[in-house]
Length: 397
Image (cartoon, rainbow, N blue to C red; front, side, top):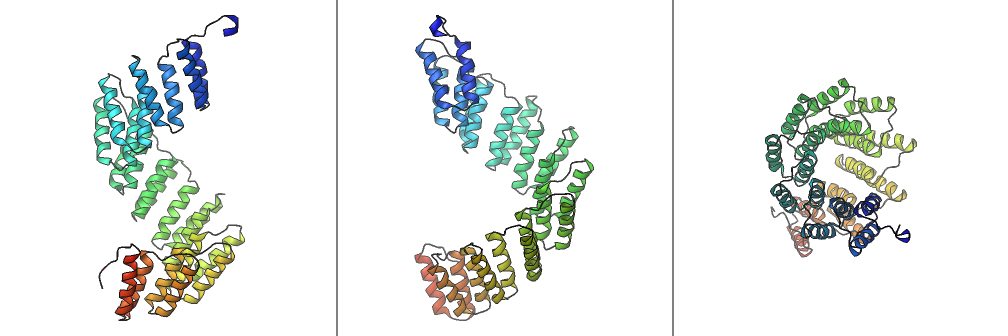
């Protein structure tokens, strides 16, 4: 263009800037912007938002702020898009105080916040568990005539579910449906998971039924969540009913779901069935991980079947999975509970030989085991060693 005597203007440069921003090409976007300045072409809001956006998306919030401040010094007034980009940047970096400062500046400049900006702040507040502030912001939205959308409700429902406030999450779900905003599979999965985690399986089942009635089909996450919920309280038959339905619907079980079933058997005191189930899934090509083995080992230890627990440690090692501090703590704690302190200390020596050092749980088990055996000298020895290694003891003995 320059070779034929034509001088590109702001619109021309913006075309290239927008394309560079779309490609997330920082160096190209910055080169184009600097060329604009060298040739005396004045950047506008599109130029600035393209450059600020590409820095923000690549995790360079500080540099985005430099161009933001330069833009203001040049007399340009940021618009909703630019403010929302910066607010989201601060939210993603967990700096809510700065995000809210940008939001205040935005309002002072007479720039209206839309539902996207509100959703951005709400998401940041939920991440930081600042849920009281989300209520205030939702009220402000209503006062300003900004209507919450699907993302508003889904964000808030997720935040309250993570916080364990299922009554609030359910009231938001009701408000969502009353506004004829249709929940999707993610909304239902979030609520079902929340109720499973607080042990309210009846509510989880009601939501499941409601989901089916809306013709929203459960996916592998839905099944895995509900199966895990039942297994967490030892209700393996209900979990297996769902398992069979899931497989019948052509959904392949994940290792996470398989681990839930093994956990369910072990929690209900049936490690042998867990053992059989593991053999079945491995024959079907599912490869167990450390969680699988640790859960099964813990199940046999709880049944005081230490010999089989050790067999599974050997199987674990044969599969190329090294026992970790959790594995050794499970075995060591089992011996301590049985008063078999010599075997417990043998496990301690073995784990140290393997380069795995005891943690707070290791020492607590050893101290409690020796106290139970009235061997206070050894209990105090491990107590002192624990303190020397920087762990805070539970001084109840």
